[in-house]
Amino acid sequence: MVESIPSLNSTKTFNSRIPFTNHTLPSIYSFKTKLKSKKFASISVSMSSSQSQSQDQQHLSLDSLIGNSSRKDELFGSIRSSLPHCLSETNLHLTVPSLKSKTRGKVLNETSLWWFDKTRHITSNAIVSFPDKNVTIAKKCSVFPFEFVVRSYVTGSTDTSLWIVYNKGVRKCCGNIVPDGLVKNQKLPANIVTPTTKAADHDVPVTPDETVQHGLMTQADYDEASRKALSLFEYGQSVALEHGLILVNTKYEFGKADDGSILLIDEVHTPYSNRYWIAHSYEERFLSSLEPENVDKVCYLCCNVCLPL
Image (tube, rainbow, N blue to C red; front, side, top):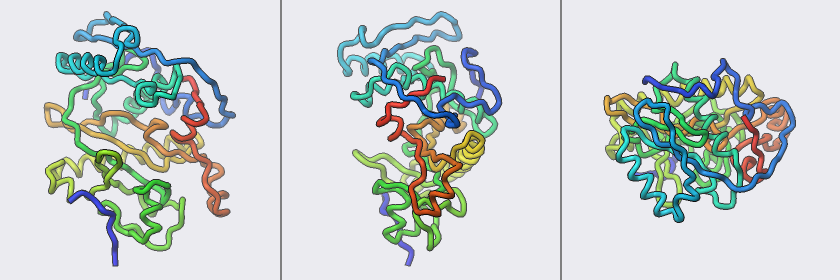
């Protein structure tokens, strides 16, 4: 008997400061040399106000301008409502208070920008410009309220990870039938999309039918977004493999623009949205029942590794 996982019942203006060369990844993705750890002082947040396509940019230090987070949220809310585009800030010091680094926000932002540029042949995205290393200006979208999680391996350790639920006997995952006989960290017969919505304190998997039945998306929108997610993932896997990495799983988010088009938003293939394994040692370790060499956000946080672009 098949058991199911419990669930809920463009034109872009890129700044020329970052060269986008064919398949030349930011150095965060180059693991052929030994990683070097560096510890940094505190983070400095910057904000940019954009007026039309003017090249005038006003930079302010939010830390010195605003004394508390509620005032900062109020300011950003005012900016977002008054501009035709959204102001998106990448600053891990705000979401991970114990993390002190001058470059992580820049690395994450510019890594996403590289991938946004490289995946334009697959899907349009919401990026308009990036006036600061930690700031991206994006088109306002009606965001679909869940993530398109794409998986290629039976792995993971959280309650909703594919290996944990599979090991409990579950074979139907978000509308996908996973075959019997797989072991931990084994590659799936094909990549699968497992949409996941956000609950108060944890992720909740949903099926494609539920996304439509609950009015989260139309069937046509879901089909288009899931096709794009799979194509993005396949492309990401091929690029990662060229650089000695296996892209194991990731998440994508999409939104609908005013003209009805579905755009890729948020972030793409960063260490905080991906799970990466080292490719050259995977097979040997898998056959020896050892965990793959892992390069993901846990390593990124705990080891305090920061590779400049």
